[in-house]
Amino acid sequence: MADNVAGEHEQHEHEPSFVESVTEKISETFHKDDSSDSDGEAKKSSPVSDLKDKVYRLFGRERPVHKVLGGGKAADIFLWKDKKVSAGVLGFATVIWVLFELVEYHLLTLVCHTLILALAVLFLWSNAASFINKSAPKFPEVALPEDIVLGVASAIRTEINTGLAILRNIASGKDLKKFLAVIAGLWVLSILGSCWNFLTLLYTSFVLLHTVPYLYNRYEDKVDAYAEKAEAEIKKQYAVFNVKVLSKIPVGTLKQKFA
Image (cartoon, rainbow, N blue to C red):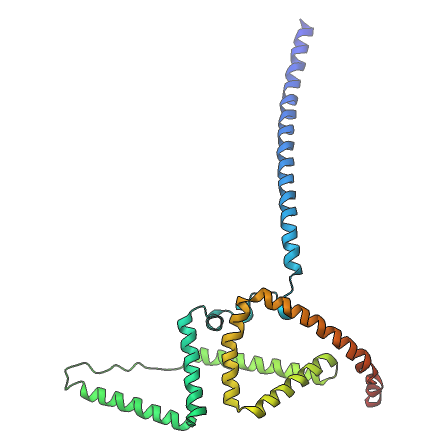
């Protein structure tokens, strides 16, 4: 009897271990399935991520075109998200350019004539309202908020200081490549300034802002492919130019002389 009781006691002790072993096996199978699924997803997602990393973007761009343009309403206008607003802004700029460039209106003359017409219409409307039994126009109080003015002034100050810091860095002679790029850009701008006046150049830049980002955003992959080939060719030609010309310039000796 004692042996039977001991045997039953051992069986009761072994039963939880059997249940535990079964649960462990079930959990292991689930863990294996989960790990295999996660490995499969990693294998599926890794080529896509690697492909995205290998895709060339113009000027090393890592953000969408909308974010590069600053986001917000300005980027929406340049990318023609709302065609009516974009067309209205471009049309208004075209009217201003036609008035000043083709009609040869002067700024002060245009402002004075506009104010004369607006004041005359509002004055006659206010006095004629009593005769035609209509309410007089209500003129809202217009005032520039101080915080907006200070914010714009602060933003302009920051941009000017950033530009001055960049010019100071270029003039210090630390980066010859950047120096040559800035000199070439200024030379191109001087040629464009001699061909057109400032207003035409400004209007042309405004039109380009309304066309180039939109076309690039639409044909992004094709443009990036051509740009990658062009950049490789430019780097190749720059390497040749560096070996034949730039490397022979005695920059170190000149720095020692001036030092």
